[in-house]
Amino acid sequence: MIHNICTDNSIASKYVADLRDVHKQADSVHFRKNMELLGSIFAYEISKTFKYEKVRTETPLGTAISEVPVEDVVLLTIMRAGLPIHQGMLNVLGNVDNGFIAAQRLHHKDGSFEVAVDYITCPEVEGRTVIISDPMLASGSSMANALEAVYNIGKPKRVHVVSIIAASYGLNYVRRLYPKAHFWIAAQDEELTAKSYIVPGLGDAGDLAYGGKRDV
Image (cartoon, rainbow, N blue to C red; front, side, top):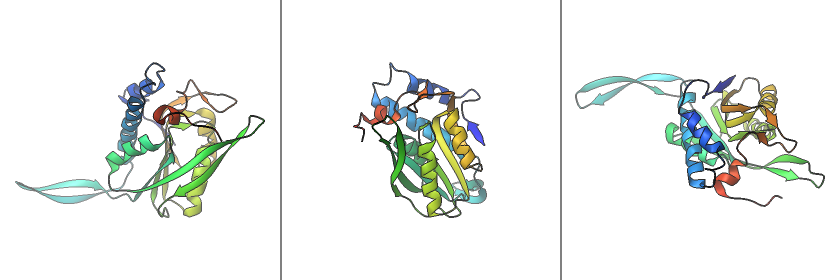
């Protein structure tokens, strides 16, 4: 299932527009903050799917009945680009377990590349709700490989995939592999270049958030 948080009028649309704006992208602090804000919005929307239970809370004047989430959550992100989204979701979800996955493009001399997951630190996921984030879902290879690594650890009860911008190709690719997953996006773009960059997209989210890098 695909959930687009910008389908209806939402302040999230402003944050996406700012992220895309080439005239604002030079400010990496502002760029990271917008990603973090979107992470918080994603977490709020996903929390509506959680299981809740009633609790009694003592106030200075009496007792209140409230409903609080009892979902057993593992929050994962694909480094480095996903870190601001992860922090935004963590700001909302609070006391949840966390994991981190390193995925990178390995470029070949002929111009092609493959995506390799070369590092993962993750708590137990068996029977738990996993939320995994990466700001750009382009070809889908990074997310598919990351999810494969997660399922090698254990079988989650439910999986939520979070991306700010998703290319239709990559979205459909990962959905075919993991049809029961919930996909949360803020924009869906149709075009994907031969080098798997989303158009119009916003560029390289990791570089814009943290500075350039040397390809390996």
